[in-house]
Every structure is written in C-alpha cells, then in structure tokens.
Image (cartoon, rainbow, N blue to C red; front, side, top):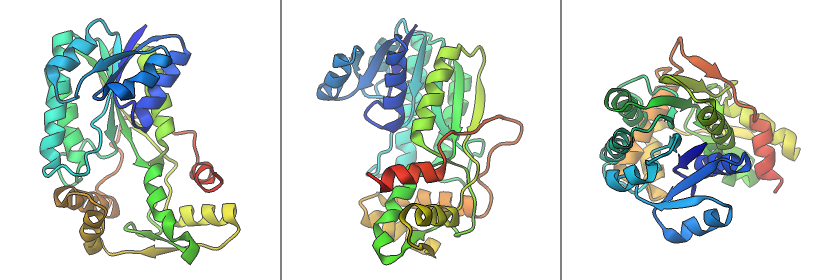
Length: 287
C-alpha cells in the first residue's frame, strides 16, 4: 500500500512514516525543505516538496496514494493563528478532494467537538467539519489528549524542588505521548477505514500532582507543584516568543480544561495510550 505522510519533521509524522516503511509500505513524505527530505530518501521514502498550505502541490503529492496522515503543524509566531489553521485546513481539504484521496488520518484534539471556548482547538473543530463536508475521503480524526511532551517545559525548575503549572495541581486530564499518536495513526491507515469517525485518544487521566509524584519516584527527591495564575499565561508565553494572539488562545484552552469544558465527546470510540506518564518522564530524566 502507498501512503503520504506530513509532519515528518515533528514527533508524530516521523513515527508514522518510520513504522509504515518498516512494514514495507510505499511512503511519500511531504516536506517544505529539500534538505529535510534527504534522510527520508536514504530510508527508502519518496519525497514531495510542498507546503501544507499549497493545495495544488499537495494535491499532486497525493495522486495515487491509498491514504495520508495530516496535521496542522504548530506556528508559534503566527500573528493570527486561527487564520493560519483555516488556510492549511482549506488547502488539505482541496487537495484531498481533487486527488480523490480514499482515506486519511488527521491529528485533532480532545475537545474538537466544541466550536468555541477551547482556544486553538476550535480551529480543529472547523477542520473536521470542513473535511467531512468537502471531501470524498474516509477520515479518522484522532482527538488526542494533552501531549505529555508539554510537561517537559515544566522541568527546568526541578533543581529548586518544584514544577510550575497553569493547571490546578489536582486536575486530572487525558494525556498522551506523541509516539503513541504516531503508532495509532500508522495502524489506522493500514486498517482501511471505510467511514469517517472520531477517536478519543488518551488516558488514564493524569494530574500535575501525579507528574510530581512520578518525578519523585524516578529521582528520589520530593517535588511539589507550584500553581500559577491564569493571568500569567499570556505574558509567560509571549516571553518565550509566542505571538500574543496564540498565547491568548492557549489561555482560553487552559481555562477550558480547568473549568471542565474541554473533555472527550461522549459516545465516541475511545482508545487508551500505552505510554504511562512515569515511563515518559523516565525517558526524559534518565537520558
């Protein structure tokens, strides 16, 4: 079988492409920079040079493919992040329609069934609706939980004996490792889904207190959670180089989790990841 994989310069797309190649499938990776395609050529993949916002180039890359993996890559400097999301989603939909792509897996998010009040996740809601309405493709929307990788940014203060959190320390939310996402996406492409569905992917729920406890078991040192106010989200994130627009969307998302708005949609198929938060943290802390 032949597949097209986007996002191979990031965590999930890389896993998807590597697993499909290991299974002896024909794989074409989509990259914007020819230099980033060279390692994939060495692994046996074809390389298509295309921006995910270029519907024509992406459509040509999809010709003849039996399936594809898509995502909207992060763009921390986008002055209007929702417009950026919509531009890429529209191009993906156009390319899938013109190439008559049979099936695709799209990295969405927990809470994507909500049209508002969920920060950047609202753009994934729009994408899901657009793909359902405008393409002949059988889509599987992987509504992933909060990435475990996001916790890594909290580890810089471990020498001081604490980890900071904008979430309440006891709030348990679905978390998932990006490697698990890649593994699920690869298996879904090979399964040949016949219809469009959303899959809730994450869990069991993890709190920042759970994260601190796992770190304590790994390091042998007590760790506490230091909660930070929501009003500090925007200045903190913009201080790291994020656009103010996106920082404000992240504030809304964090508030949505905290207030219980952002949860898995009832009645949808649920899959649990295989990587525990402790196993993930052990991999970070024992390198």
